[in-house]
Length: 340
Image 1 (cartoon, rainbow, N blue to C red):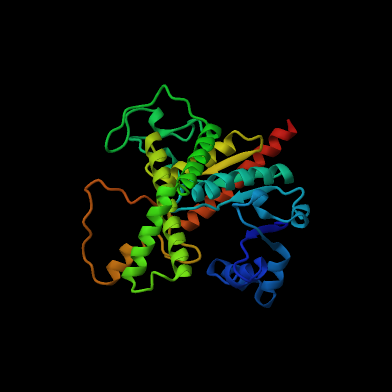
Image 2: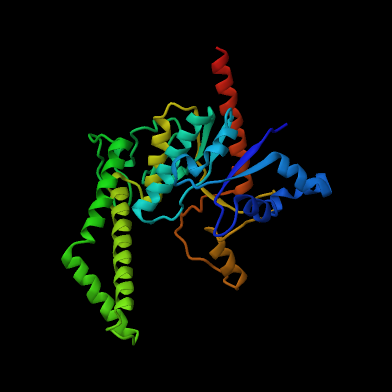
């Protein structure tokens, strides 16, 4: 009874969203039950129900074209599961995906009239001990607000105010400062010095101006990226998050929570291999526990670990089911509110 499922897909180099979806996504194992049910009519059924749309979550309105936006009028639900999951990425990149992407989802919901189901992470709680309840306020949250947290211990910042707008403004200012420092004459001289040393170590001619320019550009990019990584981690740890990932995911939540759209958050822990569907152990990609499985297959018999360490993982099929249930609940409550 599903009408249409519009799937935002990055086209990839030289390809299209449709080719990527039907060539890679639709060919995967979770679609096996539909393949078995529809047989030779599987692709026709899927093309009737699923509409791939070219886009990118880092662009305004996900980079969806006006023509495609017109097709989305009257949409029921936007499920935003996109996120940058590196723990210590560049602050600029993490904000672009985890915060600007969340804001783009909000704008898309405003444009289409849809509700928003946003996939976050339970680790937005940050460095806190004990039970953290889901009914705590999302807006204005930061872990050090609640008491002494983390290892090493940090004092509470209970008198501090926190707003996503102010934090984003400060982050953008910090990013611009780093980029301006990269243009400082002393810094440029250091880039040139390092580039010259690199060319000498590689046995290449230092008089090759083109090679030197490229090497200077590389040194500059490496320095800017390292500074942006440090800036993100410094801000995250000050407010009580362990890394830039959890910090920016929390900022994304807060941007959604203060919006005027109907929203719900899903906060899984570490998403891992399937429990049952499409079969036990199904996985795609190299996830958190993959190194442990690989070492076991290579013959390792023991894994040193802290006595009370918790490997907090949740099977991907349970997360997918939870997302569907939360989406249904969100739409049902929305409908009831409109009736009354």
